[in-house]
Length: 204
DNA sequence: CCCTGATTCGC
DNA sequence: GCGAATCAGG
Image 1: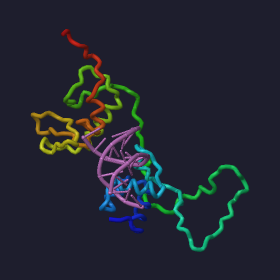
Image 2: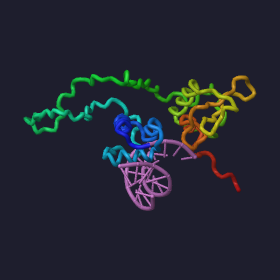
Image 3: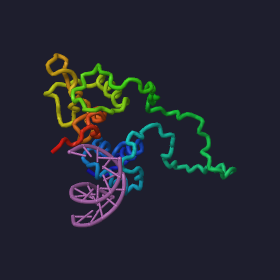
Image 4: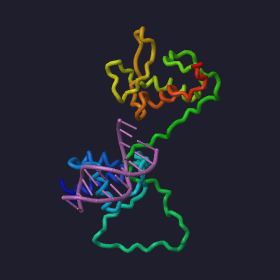
């Protein structure tokens, strides 16, 4: 595969949209993410750094890409005010790829009232718990949308946090995507791995 | 261990 | 110019 005009265009477009190199590579096909990255660099449009928000695909009101019109139209800059001020930004971007960004409703957590709602089974009971109420809340919340998979469905990348009583009919595993490496999803990792506290070395 | 981009260097 | 290998950060 070679970098045809078309492919390069797709590359630029996707990269501009904040797509990751691997995604672009996958889309283009016939190339690896390395190839994509290499190309990106050679094109001189590298930019973001590793770990950068890949989800930065959010609205980008930067009409940067301007196809060089054959008829160059001189644009007298409004250099009336050297002040570094992004002019006209009041108008919302007309183009709307994304329907609407989630406003991220945040139902503030009520002040810490009662810790450990002893209503949940909470299988691996971490001895003394000082788990942040927040973490617990997250867990119970996550359990609602857990995939509730069975033992057979467990894979290297599914949260293996058990919920319920194995002896009961209502027993399942979280199943949500695990937190890199760990056996549990983020929420469960939060309560699974305690920074040992009351676990002193029992006489040895 | 997964992922991301950045860089290097033989081709 | 190309991209696998390698590097470096999360």
